[in-house]
Length: 254
Figure 1 (cartoon, helix red, strand yellow):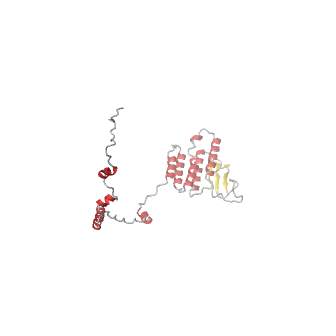
Figure 2: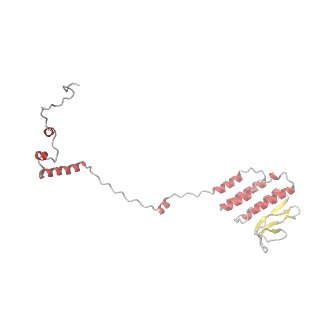
Figure 3: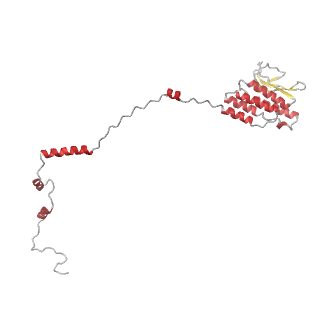
């Protein structure tokens, strides 16, 4: 390295070094609160402070947006159920859709025999007179098991036809056990006449409300031994048309 110190021009020992106090004093301003600052800037007078406060107050009021008072909402009206019910439009009560569906099913059957058509018409009229849906379903189920049957018995012998009709009649009556409605006896008479026309040789007889007779009746399970009136038919009385002889006694509840 060279001895003439070209890279680092440090001051030589003979040069007078400037003091840090004089350099900072000439280059940097005095800090607020220092002794130099106090001597240079005198404190504010009371009149000046009052003006500053006035400016601050008026400036805040001018900068703050004016808030408009919100209008008060009117009180919510209380609901009046009586008025709502009076104003509601009165709707017509819909017809019994179940009744319509049951009748529509019978009307959709393709029946060719006159006795079956007549029985269906009577059954439809009886169904229309029943207002209780529970009773209506039971009546419809009992009568629906009988339509149609004549064409299904065309290959049977007279004895086979009679046995089938007796069985269908007992099932029809027993499905109506305990079911009471205004057209019950009409329904039983219509069914007895229908079975008689299908059989062609025998008569099916309904006897509810008549006096118990051992020659024509037998007591069904649950009957009163001393009962003298037929309360319910559980099986039709069947007689031969040619001789009026009893072919089958009626199964009755007394």
